[in-house]
Image (tube, rainbow, N blue to C red; front, side, top):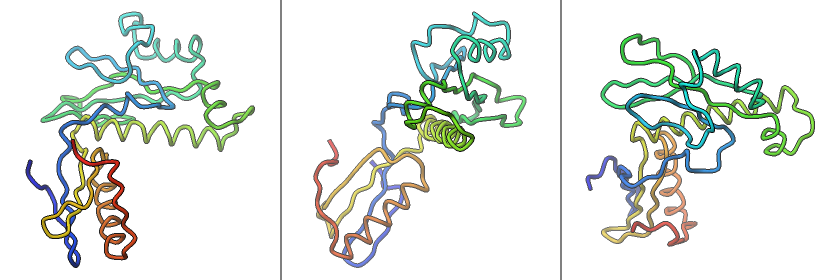
Length: 196
């Protein structure tokens, strides 16, 4: 395994690696349901109870999600398939290598349960939509292979390590935090996230 990035401060060093053994973020407990359909890839969530061929168009599927599934928020999902996979809410504006692959949606009942409310206000809807968009970004990190592991060393001795950091920006922030805590003497060797 090759080190992708190294940060050194004082006697400590953090090494960042590509995580090659990561589970899909869609296996987690998510607020949204991702209904994706593609001829070559299995994407999104399984066991939806319907398939793309049940509808004549994306509009037909959207209507079904609103009327039958009681979806309160529905966001269109687009896939870019060019030297790897990327997914986002909304178009990539690339007519050759991208297109719509489905929706991420959430029902009113699930919003009420998640946020502990009886009435869904604009504020609660905004929070739920922000959560759905974050789920898509995390899934994009999974699809594009932007998942990392961090190893904290003092000299050649491994002090701690953890894997499954989604997204480069978050990984860099965590690496810096680990170093700051190690230098400040606040680092506790947790041991709960050591590599296999």
